Image (cartoon, rainbow, N blue to C red):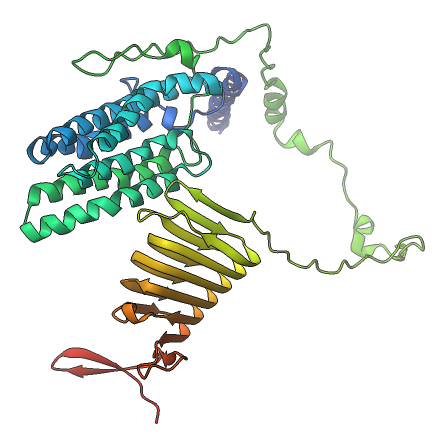
Length: 482
């Protein structure tokens, strides 16, 4: 029996020693963790065994998937100007790749130094636009040249904050204005090479915002533990491939005198207490039956002091809607009309076919759009009237109430989604306009009086539908009320 007790004590002591060793190891890690590891680096700065950050690896994947085959197919479909332009475009993309390598290994520089570091990218970007401008509309592949000159601006996302992703989408929309023309012509002629050319370039612009959202959500991510960007800037790449990566900055050295090691926990008292066995509880005070709270008869009454005031009940605060700054300006190729209220004099006169119009959070406002534009979007507006001459693609009304849309010339399509009380005024030239509605009510379309009267004829857009199964297919028709 004594031998078994001794064995049990030995096992207990062995387990306690193991726990103590683990505690000491954790203590050492905590003491040295703040100085040796520092703040966790951003995901874009984390590197693999080759020294290339995850951000650069994903950018390389974009180049391999889209840019490399895009350059290759250009040699088959492009004329001399397009080939020269694509060569500059590829140089700009690869210059941005080197810039991302630099950002993953360096601290964010001053603004003046940043412009110097971006010179290789900016030079090639400017050349892409210049080639289109010199060629002019007389060039047989002007749409190809314009597709790239309008989309190359997407590489400017590295200096955009806090929405670099949407900035790329705007450039892509401008590029697609011309690439859609190439697609339409190529589909008619069954030209698969030109279709591939468009899809590769559009694919790069579509995937770039996903890459940005993953690694550089609000702005370009630099390495807070990196070196100086200006001194670490890589030399010009050799013809055979990218330059050798610069050496990673040395890890900070912990100064033993500056951060003294915390004292190790004293385990002697713990073992001494455990060795006492049942005597461990000897020093505890015993609670008698009379000392228990439920048996105390002379407890003081729970009286609220006279000086204590009643709790104040604060009235619920009214919820205030935060309003943005009123804006009417051209941002790239997008006219932004935002947060206008009680304004009947918003006029967009200097418009171009490549421009889009985005009207957001406006109330009691009239917007007039002169000339021809690419697309008009009306989002989250109330009691707004929009009068325009011509839209190439469509007019979209989303999440809005009491909106009037009037076209004086033509528009191919009007899309209405999640709206209430929308009236669409069509001119005699726009009677072929396609109107698509979803999750909306109180919709009307007004057309010129066929009899020549001064007042337009109002036609309600159906809200209820009846669906039947005919020949194993659904047939849906509006419900007619007698």
